[in-house]
Length: 239
Image (cartoon, rainbow, N blue to C red; front, top):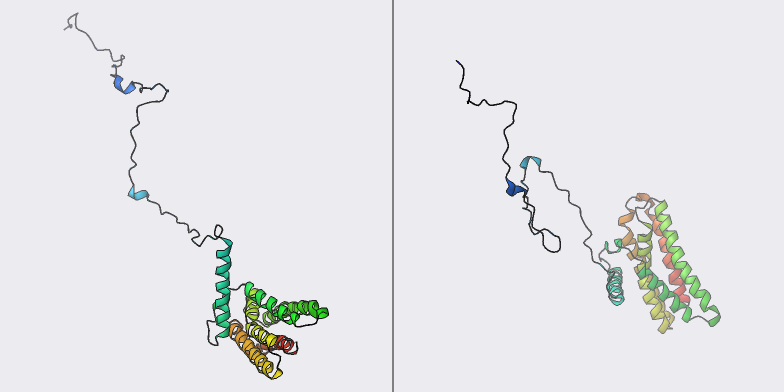
């Protein structure tokens, strides 16, 4: 049976129109400067517990910044460290690890003091050679003693050993100060002997921990140290 003439058939080839929300296509308002006044909606990220990655942490330097401090503050801090190390040299059972933090300021001050004291008491023609000789003997002797200990197998760094030998000159420097004002040989002789024994004992005590690998060769390492302090003490005594 035929359908009525006015009946409309749906054409399958004609697509159905899609309704578009015009409000979503409205352009954002612009102010007079040409910038948009419509703020975008912030997107909040959703944490995915399955994709959490470990965060790498880096350590930063947290030490004291001394670049901007006054020079006087730096000098006073270094002088306090030098004074503390000198006190440990005078103490028979002092802190043996204090000179692991080595420096050359203390040995330099002691060497200059000793050279000046010995050159001042010398005749004018011999002042400069004595000052130069004492300076060379101290530093060259300390280097030779350190090199000898290293060749024998001592586990000590070069500058740490020079630091120990230089700081242990302090008792001998004290005896040189006494000898400057006391001319009596019977007073100067026991003072220099005590200073020699004290310096040798202190240096051996500080370097004993670094020479544990020497075993039977310990005497070979101590003998140059003994000779080094003996020569300097003899210069103090005869000057």
